[in-house]
Length: 176
Image (cartoon, rainbow, N blue to C red; front, side, top):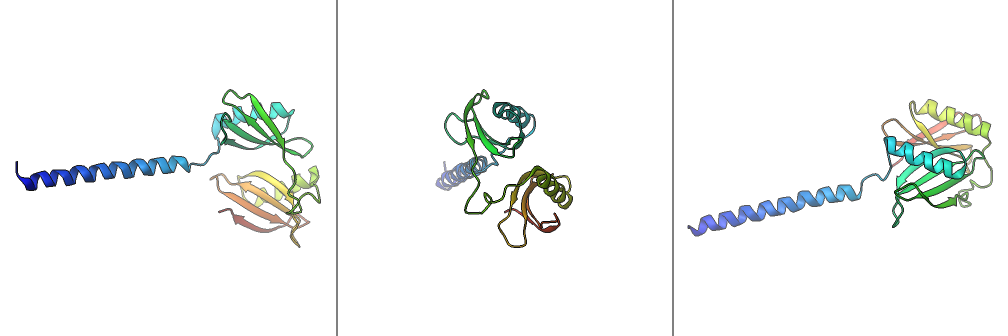
């Protein structure tokens, strides 16, 4: 066999191996950085288990768990307006419930949002982001801004909508 043919075959084999590693590494990196949110029927099933565990409420977010033994983390807003994180295993057994505390640094703990104000804020924000789902409503500590509303649009982009005290939209910005 010719030496130049052997070198050519080594180059081809080496190039093919490097290409396979690059593709495999790209797939692994994409999977490692995939959005941890749970979608569709799984989201409904997991969310229902969390709501039942806390005695009622609305599912705000369902994500895959990032700790050992934890399959899901569900954020639930209870009927009283408080929020709870529910940690579930793969069989939907409750591992823990953690009440969320208002962020004192942001000033959101100073003024609770009434059910009527929450409903009006949600309506205004959904008017700004048609077809969206409200994830959170908080009292704002920014001057001239009464409410901060997080909305997930139909295309899964998240938006921050700022409202004044009369529920007029001041700004809407896509989250990065």
